[in-house]
Image 1 (cartoon, rainbow, N blue to C red):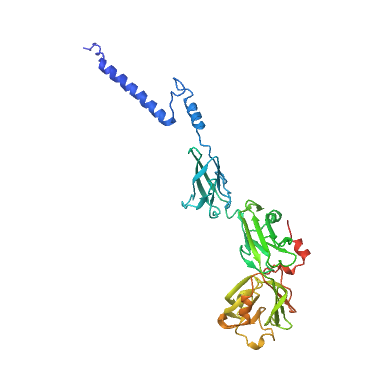
Image 2 (image 1 turned 135 degrees about the horizontal axis):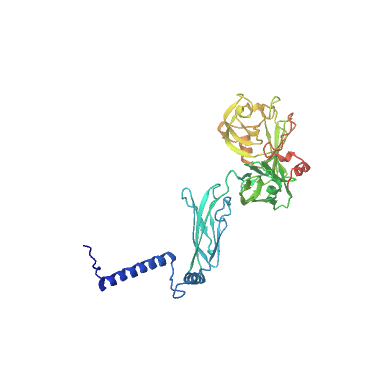
Length: 419
């Protein structure tokens, strides 16, 4: 038979237990809500409406007055490799960390003594992703933080100009400022206008483009002896052409030494060295042969080597010569013209006949020792000194063959100015 008896009513103890469990569940849910939101739901009233807004307002009111600014914007893909830095107002920087994202390598930098700024101590790499975290505090000790992740401009999309001379050098009066860019420049006017060359002598300095990758600067006459030249490069962010942007920002200075211009007369096979307007030495030389004459013209010493190898095959002479220990060599052209010591020629050739493949040879010893004309001229010459060759049957050296723009008239030089 079916049991129609009603189930017994729960005891008061069980009912209290269930209510207790329900209340505990509600409390647990409330605890989770508070943990997720980070505020007190009852702060704004009995039902919690407006509670978070009130908490946010209170937090904002007590926020640090330190305002951090990062020059490289978060998410940028063309950030500068030079200008990345951090500044703060209303407080002082306490710590800045800049790391490469791919390998975690830290970039060294320093906070200014007054805590107002930070800069990396090295140039950033091109085409590299970085993460920056900057921390600061205001005068009440309240903290502020700024984060930025950015990528520097890539090698593909940027250009750099290698230049000579280097800053801090003392050079001869013929030394031009010469730029060689790693990509062809089509926006020549803007690029040149962001490179300025000035002299303490007050001489007017003008640029001249030799094609799309080379830009030289010089005054009308040689630099004044004893003057100081300042080169300011402000190419960071400058468009050089379609898809390429400059990344350089730098100022360098170099000094002009005493004036020294040496004239080689191929008729007499003699070089006359004039320093500050006075003849200091006359040196017998052996220039280019009738078959391989030396260029005429004004040539600037661009490199100096105590000893070097001269291999004819590198300049179009096949296997005619390969001398591995040429002493006291100074480059006069890109195509291989040097003025150098010669130990292998008979002493009788100097001052008498041209025997070289186009270079200017001075009597010297193997190994460069002893008191020789080659050694004397090497030790008394600066990069940037001028060597003038005259009365050779060859043509005048081209202005862009080495640092030899002095072989252009001033009007020709100015015609190549894009600024």
